[in-house]
Amino acid sequence: MMKKIILILVILIGVVYISSKFINFSGNDEIKDSPFQKEYLDKNGIVVVNIWATWCKPCLSEMPLFEKLISENRDVKFVFISIDEDQQKLKEYLSKNKINDITFSNKNYIKPIRSFLGSGDIVEVIPETFIIKNGKVVDKSVGGIEYQEFMDKLQSFK
Image 1 (cartoon, rainbow, N blue to C red):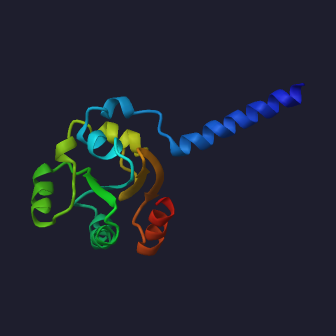
Image 2: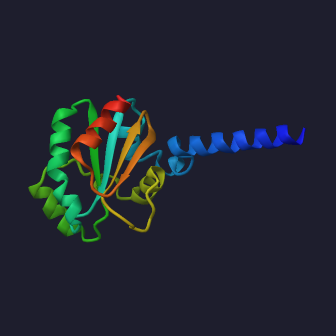
Image 3: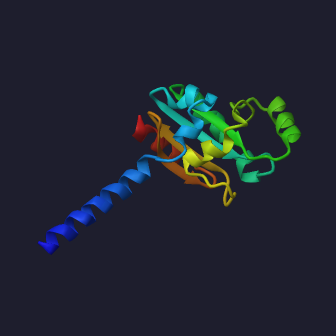
């Protein structure tokens, strides 16, 4: 009898652990009125979210890679969220580089969005890139991405 109880507990813990990798239980209520929720999470499909900054050299060096990914994956939405503290520098960068940065339209929701994604408040490593499918985070890449590896991940979720 004790073995059965332990086995059931182990199975339940495993299910909860695996589920937590694909479902984020926290943060959804805090972003429910955000443009991010309305434009990207309330719709089916795949969304790629990149956390970046203008001062991050790896972030800037992968922007051409994202341009290529965007042009080859028209069915995927790509959005960028900056962690820049210097808003003027961010505005200047965005005026010269046309990326779908949603930082300003979601400025009151950045921390809850990062919480939803599973990205901490304290910057450890950026860039961070997330794949969301049908409103759930299904993949997280920390650090720069490689084109073919990321393309293969995207294809696997389509």
